[in-house]
Structures are given as structure tokens and as C-alpha cells.
Amino acid sequence: MILVEDFYQTVSQWTKKLVEIPSINGTVGEVTVMDEVERLLRTFPYFEKHPDRVWYKEIPGDPLGRKSVFGLVIGEKGYSTKTVLLHGHLDTVAIDDFGELKNYATDPEGLMEKMKELDLDEEVKMDLDSGDWYFGRGSVDMKSGVASHLSVLQYLSEHTSEFSGNVLFMANPIEETTHGGIIDALEELVRLKKEQHFEYITAINADFIGPLYPGDRTKYIYLGSVGKLLPSFYIRGKETHVGQPFEGLDPNLIASELVRRINYNMSLADEAEGETTLPPVTLKLEDLKKSYNVQTPFSSFVYFNYFVHKITPSEVISQLLEIALDAFKDVIADLNRQYTKYCEVLNRETESLPWKPRVITYEELYTKVMKDSGEMVNERLQEVLDKNKREDLRIVSRMLVDELLKMDADHTPVIVLFFSAPYVPHNYAKDMKEHDQKWLKQLDSLAQEIGEKNNETFQIKKFFPSLTDSSYLSMDDSDKDIETIKSNFPGMDVLYPVPVKTIKSLDIPAINLGVWGKDAHKWTERVYKPFSFQILPELITKFTLSLLD
Image (cartoon, rainbow, N blue to C red; front, side, top):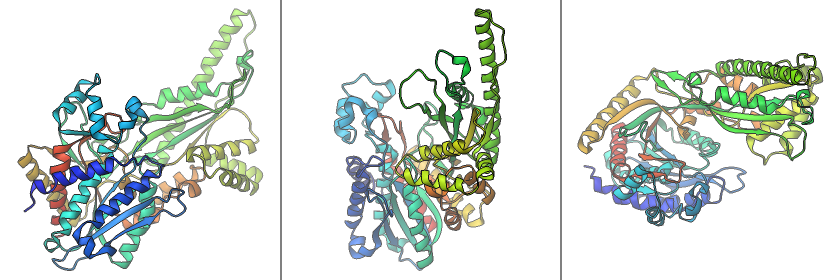
């Protein structure tokens, strides 16, 4: 019999320990927090008896020495190769959004005391005053989730006679940017599959969930993960002196029109089985002019977060090419209208401006330049990669496009559409096998049972709506889809080599049973303690035991 009080204090204590360690993505704190997790694991009596069942895997070549930590508990009820994976990440986003409270971002008690002095949003104030919420960077995304998994693992390590098979705990770094931790850890999952004959029946992530609309208290269980593409546009215009503006073509004008047409455009949201993604949003927009002068910009760069459920990369490209072409045509048409007015003011004869819309994909540009210049093209691109290894991945891809445009004989204004890092695979539970349908029924039954006992409502959905490491445990994209992405992703094999074959060989069904909270990636980030510290670990424990019965 699993008692609620077996979890609450433990999860609370460990959440506090983890939140108090600053582990901002890209800092040495990512290593420090993993060291703490390994230390906690080694305090379990089970791991004192089996020290070899706690280990870590360093990421080769990582300048910070970041690593993933593993803990393995083997059931003693009987022999089985069935394995349940409990996983989560421990890096966080930065803390600049805390402003004057920045020094309290990882000091939850101090932060909550300081917040009481502020004029807060009504909902935030109500949650703070209730005492049921725990604030701080990483509290909901997702250190409380890892703490919950640790408490589940501790319970199972003390009750090995109740199950057969294996429970594998895994904590990863580098989720908030490139998902580099989980990608690197896939090798370890493959090694265990080969050497220990692990049969991964499901992976449970405890990444955060929250209200989907004001007042929503439903606790959502997700069976799959949304995917993500990062469509990017390099816009080359025509520079000119500001004293002769109509002799040039401002790439910022084209870029802003692309943003107007794509940003928040719900017609570009992807639907599958009654669930719809969030629309694309702009993540970066800039011109590439390096300093002030009175010359107009030569080129601009913009990229978008683009969630996918089932739409193919080819379909995304087709959609965006059409939008880009229409945007380019409309910009030229409007410029001609403005030029006509300008000429009328000066009493001059009007001629159409020389601009023609040109929109191409990276694949088309690469093919064209290769045809004209041969192998020298690849040598030039490799030089760019070699010289800029430490740059932001998206900037390096943009540099590769720029290098190709320098070699292109056509120097007219152009929009080049390409993909940048990261590419996040999508997956969802469709055409479920018989044993998958069985555990889905078990999960639904347990959720209803625990929900009734605790006055909670659970709902099972197909897609985790935000980004998650679970996307790299299985994938729905076909080989043709992957080839389309690679052909239009400058330097993908070097900059962001997703191990497609490995992911497909593992093919681990992914479930998200997450902590419940609000305002992830905001300074008011907080986790709801009664559910996340009590009910959630009980559900995960009972579900794991049902899978390994």
C-alpha cells in the first residue's frame, strides 16, 4: 500500500535542494546539479548495496563537462527484461527576468518573502498567499519533476519484491536550448538495450503541465510530443544611400512583411486527431548591418518557432514559399505605389522600379551554385564551419547561406528559405500495439481512481504542447522527411546531427505525467505542491508497478 505521506516531504525537500542550485543552461551549474542528483541517489540504501547501479555519462567534447546521470533499480519478483524509463532535465533558462529580485531567483523562501512586498497580479498574489505554491527558477520546469521521479525510484528501490524488470532513472542537461543531453544519452540507452537486453516499454517524463485556459484545473496526461522546425529566412536586398532610398530595396521591409504574415498565423497551426498546435511565432528578427552609417541594410534574417503534429517538412516549405513569394510581390507593389507618389510630388515621369520577386530554398540555391562552381563550393562551406564552431548554431547556418549567395552569379534581391537548429521530432500514440493499448487502459484506470480519491480530474491527450526531451525517444518523420530537412538545413550533419537511426531503433513510447504549475519561463514560475509533491509520484509509482507486474 502506497501512502501519500511517503512522498510529500521527500519531494518537497529535494525540490528545494535542486532549485537552490543555479543550473542555467550553458553554465557550470548544469554539472553541479547533476553532481547533487548523483549524491542523492547514492544515499539510497539500495544504491549503497549496489553502487555500480548509479553512474553518469559525460558528453564528449563538452567544454563544461556536462553529463547525464543514471540510476537503475532491478525488480526481484521475477526475471524480466521489461524496462520503464523515468527521465527529466535539470537545466533552466536564465534569471534576468527576475529584475531586482535576480539574487532570489534560486532562493524560493527569500523570493516568496520579497514577493509579498510587491504589487502582484491578482492570481499570483492569491497563489502566493495560499501557501500551496512553491516559487523559484526551475521550480516547475522541471526540478520538482525530477524530485518526484527520485522519490518514485526511492520507493521502488525499497520494494523490489513487488515488481519484475527494471526501472531506469535518467537526468539530462541541455534541454532548454538544443536537447543535447538527451541526444547524447541515447547511446547509453542503446548500450543497455544491447548488453542488458532491456525492452523499453515506456518512458515517463515529468515535465510541467498547467492550465490551458483561465480557471482550468484539469491534469493532462500526454501520450506523445509536438515536433518543431525552425524555418529561417535570409533576405538579401539592395543597399543604397538614404538620400536615394528608391534606388535600393530595404530587406527589413520584406522581413517585416514576412513576420506580419507568419507570426501568430493560426492558419499555419497544425491539426491532428482533434488537437491543434500553437501557431508559429518569431524568435529572432535582425538586419545584418554591423554599425551605423547612412547606407541602408544589405540583408536581414528572421526565424520562427514552428510546431508540428503531422505536417511534413515538404508541406511546411511549400506553405512558406508561397507566403514569402506573396510577401515579396506585395512589398514591390507597395514600393511602386510610393515611388509613383514621390515622382508626382516632384513632377517627374514615373517608371516601375526594377525589383523582381525571387524566392528559393537552400536546396535550390546549393544545387544552382554547385552546378556553376563545382567542388569549390563545399570547400568554401567547410571553411565557414571550421572558423565558426563556437558561434550560435543558427548564425552558422545563416553564414553558410550568405557564403552561397556570394558565389551565386545572380546578385539580385532574394529570399532564401532554410531550416536551422533545433530540429525536434514529433511522435504520438497512433496505431497502438496490443500491449500499448493495455498499459493505456491501466493508466486511464489509475488516473481516474487517484483523481476520485483526491478530487482531481485527469484527461489523456495525444501531444505534449510544448518542447520536451521525449521527442527524441521515438519519431514519426519518414526517411523522405528527414532527407528534406537535411537538404534544406545548412550544415546539419555538423551543427545538429540528430541520430535518426538510433531514435527509430529505440522507438520508446513516450508519456508525460508532469508536475502541475504556472508561468514556466517567467519570474513568477511556480509549482502546485499538493498535486506535484503528493498525487503525481503516487500515480507514477502505481503506474510503473502495473507495467512491471
